[in-house]
Length: 259
Image 1 (spheres, rainbow, N blue to C red):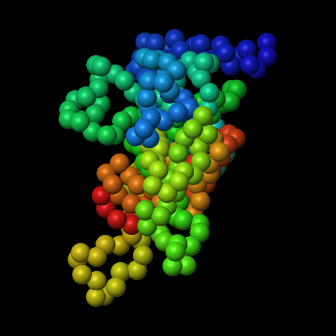
Image 2: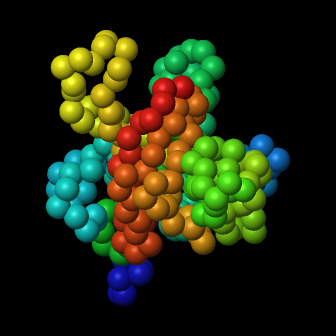
Image 3: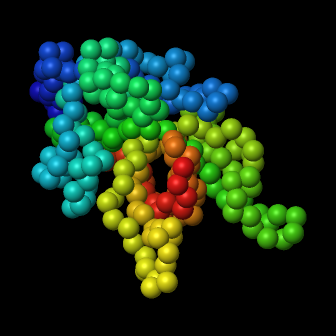
C-alpha cells in the first residue's frame, strides 16, 4: 500500500470522527470578488456544511507539521475531517445553526467569524489550518512620486490588493480593495520608549500578529498598510510567507491608529 492510499484511509477515518463530533463549515476558494471586494460569496463557495472539528495546535502538535521551533499556538489549528476534496489555501467558515450566534459567538451582529485556511495536508503529517477571524484590506504606498515630487504615504495614494481570475495583484489608486480573510490577534505587549514628559493620551506602540492564506500572485512587504475590520490602521514590520509546507503568511505589525 502506497503512502497516498494510507493518507486516504487516514482522511476517511477523520471524516467518520468529524461526522459525529464536528461542526459544519462552508468552504470557499478565492477566485473572484464582488463589487465590495468580498471573496466569501456564493460564486466562490465549493462546498457547504462539511463537518470538521479543530484543536488549538500547541507544542509538539505544531512541530510535527510546522517547519519552525516557535510555538504558534494562537495562529494554528490541528484539523480533523476528510480533507481529500480540498486544496491548500481553501477557506473554511463555520456555519453552525445550533452552536452559532449566542453559543460560539456573541448574540448580536459582528463582522468577526470563526474559520481557518487549509495550510498543510501532507501525507502522514497532522493537517494544519491557519486561524481566520476577520477580513482586512491591504494597501501598498505609492511607488512613484506625486506631482510635487514627494512620496505620499496616505491611503488615497496607495494601491489596493485586488483579486481577478484567482490572481491577486495591486490595483489602481482608488480602486475597491479586496476583503482578505485573516487571523488577527494582539501579541499582548507594547513597545517603544516612554518619555518622562509623555501625557496619558500618548500611547506606546502596540504589537499585533496576523495570519493570511497564501495569495496567488502577491506577497506582502515591509511597510505595507493594513486596514482592520474596525477601521484600525496597521503597518507591516516583519512579513514572512511560505508556499511550501505550512502555507500562508505570518506578519508582525504595529498599530498606527485605532479604529
